[in-house]
Image (cartoon, rainbow, N blue to C red; front, side, top):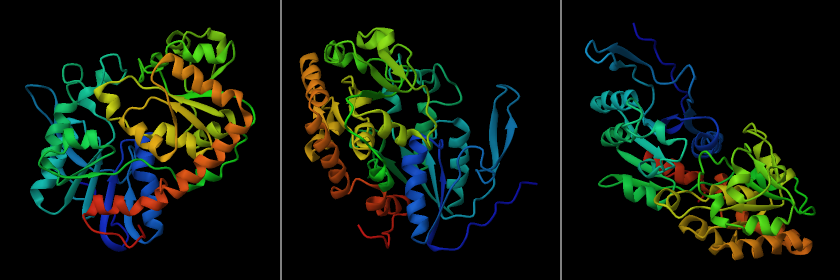
Length: 368
């Protein structure tokens, strides 16, 4: 017997079940945060991350020839809308096919990265390429998309690649409003980068010698591991002060307390042209002005007044020196960009209605 699913609580409008890929980056910003706002407003929405006891249940049977398991039956979720985040798994695709054949659900896929454009140097490559990962890859994602009624993408670039002949919504990443109230002292000049070289293999190099020249022997504060950061920037190892992986609940406060000048360099690739504006937006919400590569999504922020553009090493050096060397400018920018985040509606609270419309195909009672 298959286990029965617990009934979702009655609420306002369709019942939405969100199957997040994680509880950190994408899962938090693109499912958990908007779901919290919408649930508080009375909408019937629940998030089921990996390991949750109400995660989708299925019966699996091993194929005697291949030795691989396949979905033979799926427990019908007690919901109207099912939203799957980056379903790269073959089993997810098979389960979605079974759900689609019932005709009972609106099925939505949510994507925040252009997986087909993942660099071979990216640590994620082996987990998404069909030749490297048989049971989880972008071919299974393509199959899953065939079963979906709609696609939600974080950028127009991703929407264009994966949303062909399908209802498609672009819902950009936003930040929760409470980040705007985190204590931040822009006084000390502390340069910082958030990320890991293993998943950003050639991004730091885009600043060339600019970072090392601007620091002039000082420290680069890294929210993440220190692996290959010195090598990628031309800094000495003792110039890299890395936090290691910071728990997601502490991450925004860590940014606000430890960094006063941010950098967000990106290599000009297809993958990065689909990358969202989240990193410099997080910095801005914490009161940290950043120097950024003006690729499409970052240029959108620049046009709003967030981020100082830099294309060449000389530009990186000058922009970093401008922020690091002028306390008054740094302080005024800190206050100004937080106002921009609020006034431009770049918070989850201001835009949660976009999520509801994309998930359900219906308008929300929330203002927006």
